[in-house]
Amino acid sequence: MRVLHYMFGIPPVRTGGLVRYAADLMKQEMNIGIDVHLLIPGTMSISKRKRTRVIKRRKDYLQIPAYEIYHPLPVPMCNGILDIKAYTEKCGSAAFQKFLKELQPDLIHIHTFMGLHREFLVQSRRMGIPVVFTTHDYFGICPTAVMLYRGTVCRDCTWKNCGECSSSAFSKKRLYIEQSGCYRMLRKHDRLTAAVKKAAQLSGILSVRTQVQENKKIKMKIDYLALRNYYKSMFDMVSFFHFNSLTAKKIYEERIGECKGRVVNISHAGISDHRRRYHYGETLRIGYFGSWAVHKGFFALLDACGSLYEEGCTQLELHIYSSTNTRKERFVKSHPGFRADQLEYVLQGIDLVAVPSLWPETFGLTALEAVSYGVPVIVSKHVGVNDILQCKDYPGCGFVYDGTQQDLKRILREVYENREMLAEVNKYIADMDYDFSYKTHVRKMIGIYKPLIQNQDVGNGAEGGI
Image 1 (cartoon, helix red, strand yellow):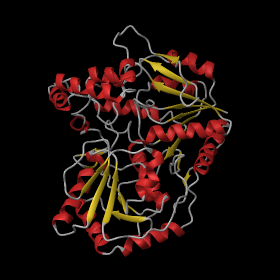
Image 2: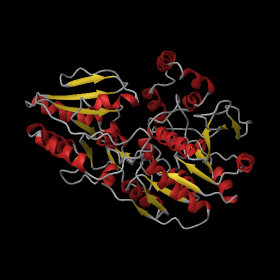
Image 3: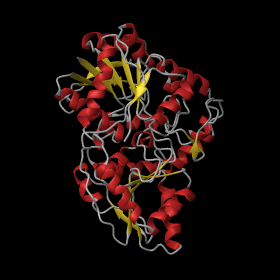
Image 4: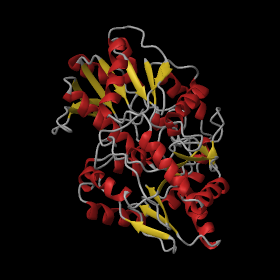
């Protein structure tokens, strides 16, 4: 079996849950004898004369043969889209015809449409190659990929508000810089990258404020209907959808109609069964891992903890693990980011892990990581892991709040005043029947691959939770 994976890049330029999931899946597939290959977007050419083509990278990635799309479409990440033409540029199916004919993959696994031309899917369909699509985020049905509008889950299916949400969209200059060979080299040296970014921000090239001002000057009416139809035509060429959660499945099908697919919760190779029982002291130690992004709910969590502290809950600590600058609040304990092999040590100092996402997060691996060590979680109702862990009713694996700061504060107060609640949840986690094995997840994915390759019915459905 030969499988070609596509994602929006590799470290050090691209990082995060999508990259880790795809990397671990590819490594495990390779270990069990699957012939794995990787395709990523490469350098964007400024010259209009340059044609899109696929080239072999000089270095493999994790011993996996890797290829690049020279002159791909832009990769906006979560910053939105204003230049519709740049993201729907045609390249002709011939750009991928030679590559796919030479590689002859039995199946293509796409982890995002960022940077990928529609013609790639057109050629794949012509050759009869089945395509699996994993719903890591909402790019393709939302230009910012997070399905948020003014701080709440976007319910608009017409894309009429996309221009407002894309006011911080990257300029062409920045997109070219971030997808250039020079930037890739700089990312290998953190200090040099920081210095270049600082200089670029001073010049206005990377300034979000400057970009917002420039974007507001755009006078032309942006045709988001054309962009929506472009991605809809790509989704129509997907053979099978791998939904991370029921949350992701619901939102995708609201936007593009009923899809042939299955809900299979994601995981990664670092997650295994480390559950244990804990004793809880007088101080409630809440952990938050990740960036200070609004859509991640960081500021809602910060404000809720701050309000509790001011109201007399002074034996409360919010431990923040982030590469962002430290904070000065008395109840905050700032820590730098940590390596994956340090997770066990970090969780030993945390009583409750918070995943307070405002966006309908398609899964939430942080919550599963915490539970795998027996640590209770508090998550907003928007996080997809709720569908998988089934922790909607206490005790469960933790606490689910309605997505508002008020309800988050209410539950945190209850836990603060009754630490026995944590002990009960910890006992439930330690005793529950759940298979944390990553190999189990990989077997489920292979169970999707094989029938598609053999042109058999995979079947729809969803796996059970805890």
